[in-house]
Image (cartoon, rainbow, N blue to C red; front, top):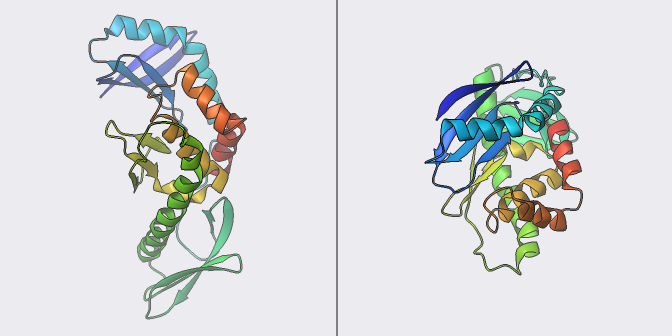
Length: 235
């Protein structure tokens, strides 16, 4: 993994280059406006930059699109009164001192009870554990909803893992495991289904070819609007 720069039209595009065991080159602009290029192992730097230059207008357009949502929501301090997302809705945090640690979502609020409710680290740990548990439940339901739409294809139902990811909502490994960003639990259900469906489509088309997008469109007509909603809901 290496960092490089491409100058196009007076604009400097910083990108991360990964050489992979693949036949085609993939260019991705992430929600944080970073650019990741996956290229075949034998691809030359000259060829990579030539293809980047051809896609430069699209890259800049995507970077500008994501950039309009900055600054993002301020860093959470885990104190009473601030809001936290769950399935696309904002819930106010209320902290309660109690010997028994727990997290409850009720009446439009997160009620977090803790032995030391004044300790942000403890509150964050309790809330993160709650989010992870709910992510397991909600992501499993999403897989169930989305998988039935691909039953006509000769592919095996994938295993699913959950972890925090810096630049992606989801990914598909070479072995067919779908990894979902645990922060996706904060997004609306239809956005979770979009990410899950996107990765399921990669079981059939590994790249972002026209065939891939045609399949995605057939399952989620107007998927671009759902993707847009995902980015908006998570700012």
